[in-house]
Image (cartoon, rainbow, N blue to C red; front, side, top):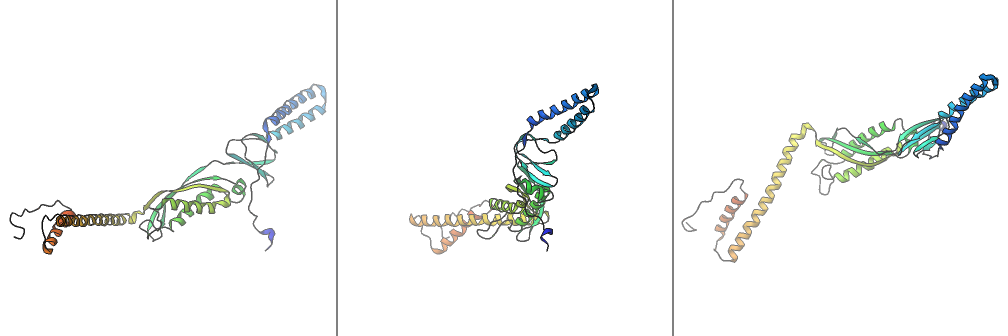
Length: 298
């Protein structure tokens, strides 16, 4: 393949300094005034030479006027002369450059991209809704202008693609032991998303400062089923704690009765006592005891 037909290599920003605009503005104004005076002298009998000088002075003044531009803080200007990249001015102020230079102003400030809600299948195949906010700024103006068609649109599309890819690599919740999930590992997921975005957007001269999830939920079609599952898991977890506590209390009661010799119970009576205590401690409704007015063995 002919190398002359291959795509151009990656562009790199070159920072340049533009001339101070105030000094050249004074010269520009002098040329305007001089052109007016030369016209007056020519009309009053100075001859065609004055008129010719007036035209030349006016043309030069008009050309100079096209070379002035201003930059605010955190703003840059990419200078292009007849299709050739001349450099980027990053300083703020009032400047003058070659009038034939095309000046493309680019904001260097941090920007927020608030992504839309996306429906994605997570690692286990469950459909979820996810959205993220991305904080980014232009780092290399040459890459942003020349290496991609529209860097703002590029950031938007690649951010959506990165969110989809990262979401598909993690389970929503209830992962394996030590497994990072979207719901439980927000910090790790945000770090992975930031790395993914930086890798994708570096070719556009964009620096990703932060990326975080702003919305995470099951898709509506499975939300109710997943809610019931979560409720069941919560009930099971609560029951486990209740049973564990009840067994500990029964054990403590039997040990205390035996140690202080309050009453001697055989194995059958111990089993009955354990059963009764567990019913009282683990039951959902309030227990109503029956008082035995006879002996323990009647």
